[in-house]
Length: 256
Image 1 (cartoon, rainbow, N blue to C red):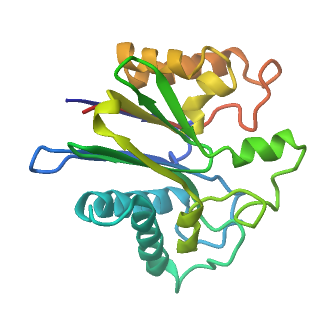
Image 2 (image 1 turned 180 degrees about the horizontal axis):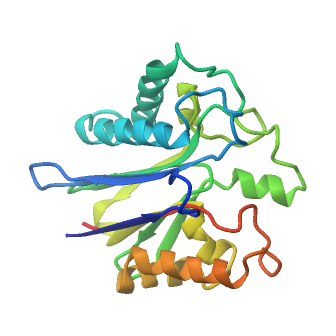
């Protein structure tokens, strides 16, 4: 088994809002990976006294624990329960009805001897490598479809006809892209926050198959280093327009 992960803040002066972790059962059979990409709000405009890094750590930790310990629960139910658990912790101190209450994208995958289950919510990505080396990206493409149709994303978060992130409402788990595949059809898998996925989606260094090949050969930190080099080469976003010059990045590679 090979498990590698790396994460890096976009700005060393700010806390990293991404979360990534892996859990392996004591039995040695199967595993769980969880990756969250926190949504950065304007300063002091999220109605929460805790902040996004606190939220992603709380939600990510709860989702990891539930996904590993409650294998009778589908991943969407695990996410719903994790959101509910996290919401309850700060319900009485924070304005959770605020449109920009702390929230995040979610990627989760869980495997055992027979099956690989997965869940993707919003614009982080899960990559599945088949036994023949073919790479299948699992994407929640609602943001891309809205942009392609010319919509502005402001005001379209967590509403019907828009896109969805994990925030304070457990029901959003039902909006995630979920599925499963036989274990013998997955040789390895990887999850990337959109700050790491820039290698493909913004800087066009290669496609998802080439991205996976880089991860397999050199590991997650090498991918993040290449993203940072591309950001450094275009610090103002002139050649490669993007919302942030530098973004938090997180990657996990797992070969069960």
